Image 1 (cartoon, rainbow, N blue to C red):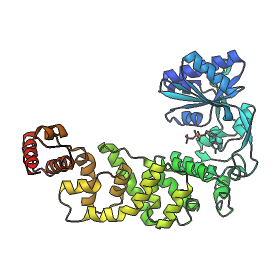
Image 2 (cartoon, rainbow, N blue to C red):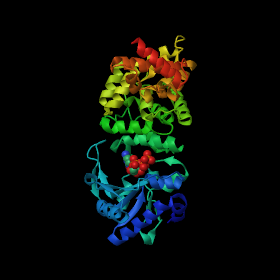
Image 3 (tube, rainbow, N blue to C red):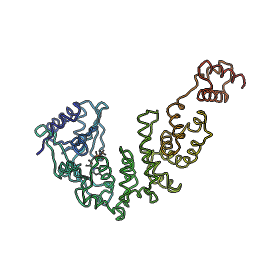
Image 4 (cartoon, rainbow, N blue to C red):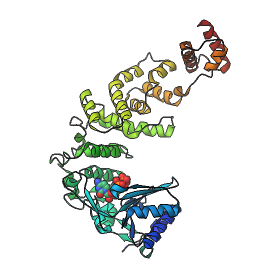
Length: 428
Ligand code: CTP
């Protein structure tokens, strides 16, 4: 049996390694077995950064987590219904602890019925072989790899493989997961796995899937580093249409997604002061070519947070006219650009920048994000009061005029601004 202790030592930050040893010691004291499992083992062996760790306890996972939390003075949040708990370590990392369990699927795509079991059975219920690897943490076996399903072989041959033919029927979200992992790691689907996904939609395996679970998968996929590739693959398997039957893959959607990638990369590099929610920008792109009714239907059927629903809907309705105005030759003044764009969510601004075919429109949005939106007059309401002006709508008007003058460069210094404020106050 492989021992991965040297890899743990090399790949994990020291504080995390110490906590894993401590977890093993605690398991020994409590007379239970604890293993590190799932995505964290997979990522460890792939040499990818480990942010959080999943542990499975053969025994009471919640009691284990509570004791670990007490010993390390770390807060614990238990989810009794699922027999799981999360221990948070000084905001640097989390450990999710679960009670080893088996699952049985009462009906396809429903959440499974779970009952406590052994580590081996817990690993056997999982989606792909690469996610069935576990590392023992009890001190007498620390670092020993459990590989019951050929996970190591598949990691080495870069293969996504289901454990059994019923896997996607039991849980159709695994189709999305398979494609996400395939694209994220640059792996390939095993022949059998490929065959099981092929025609999955025609076999109606997604029909019993709840919109809540489907929506979670959509958000996960759109939050990947390269959503475009995963979306292209979902389209190849005819799965994209489960979001909405009118959603189809097209050269213009590919181009838009590519442009969103570039825009998000630009934004990251430029630190333009926007805070986009990546999945929302991509969702806007998916909705872009759909008719109004289809967008409304899609947004209604999924449990989107109200604020995001409103944003995506408004973007779909307004983007055409906003883009036309942004590309218009008569849009010269920074203040006009400011008034056109102020109040739009960052997600919408980045979407518009990606969608626009006009170079000057892109420049206008960049300038707004970088500069214009941050321009504020130095004159305040107090200054206007000191000039003898009674508080009222004139304040807003004057302050707006001052900002516009600053934006357009007609005044450059604070002294000039105060001079203009005096003039405007006299006139009102
Ligand atoms: N799992 C599964 N079937 C699912 C979802 C999850 O078998 N539909 C199992 C997998 O073994 C997975 C583990 O539960 O490794 C934890 O799930 P999750 O945290 O979603 O997966 P990760 O593999 O950690 O994926 P990611 O890297 O995207 O967080």
